[in-house]
Length: 412
Image (cartoon, rainbow, N blue to C red; front, side, top):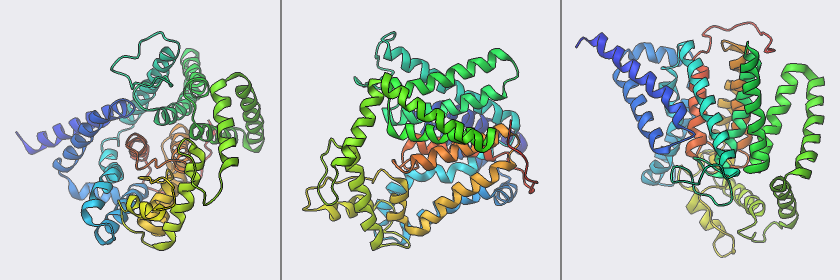
């Protein structure tokens, strides 16, 4: 077999694996790991290293992702937690390292378009299956996550809600881009169903914050300040309507308000008090950050540092503070936070240089979803959310224009 034939075969296999990965992420963790391994193997074995390095160096988003992972690796080697403990934790952020490899298989616009439609279809299926479970139309069989309280499909409730909320944003962008009425209305219906799913079936405060931010973003970019004000009014009315008509929505809002009012700094929160527990995590983690503010205490060090912090206080220990910014600050320091924010910023500012307004809006929606989600959860640490972020970043920014373009309108 000729070298060119082998390279071509590896490129094709890597592209197929990268495409299927978009379908797998909302469904199967085990398959994710296999497909990601195939992508990395094909990327490394297909040669043309000088070309690949030059392409990565020309893409600030890919460099920013590598810089963040590189800082975590540096902290793992020279931090206080020990290389073994750091290594176990560092593996959970390997998705950042994989972004350039994934992106190399999405340089073709047709492949990117197919990838985004595939992930949209699988998220639409998740929404439909969730409602079928909710109404008892399908049994809670072994292929679904077993949860007697929530009609989740392949992922637990928090991850499910985040996936569905992002799906609603993707659906509405596809609807606006559609040229035929039936396609436009199909995606619009799925967008509405996705919102209703997290309001009436699988509630979550993180998903509510994300969808609120995405709605306001849509109002501003499509209709300016009047659109922002209009969407703010619509969102407020929707909250009132959903509060009056959805018991699960009402209970979730009432519970957060009650738990916040009941929390007292320095007093151990009850384990059933999720809001109080989170506030307790945040406050104690800030104290840990102050001890190693610049470079942190090393990846994987947080559980032991936090256990020391709360020893003898009656407060519960935790593996992470349910806030990605605080987790990175505690383990990689303010330098790590700066690199994380730089990645988000590079994605945001360079989104205008993507191939179409659709990709621009979607890329910024990815940033808003993850940046907001990281306030309440460790989204880059979590497998599904972190890998989806890496995959979408790779898909979208593989098409980044190499030369600076004039500012253009993002209106569709």
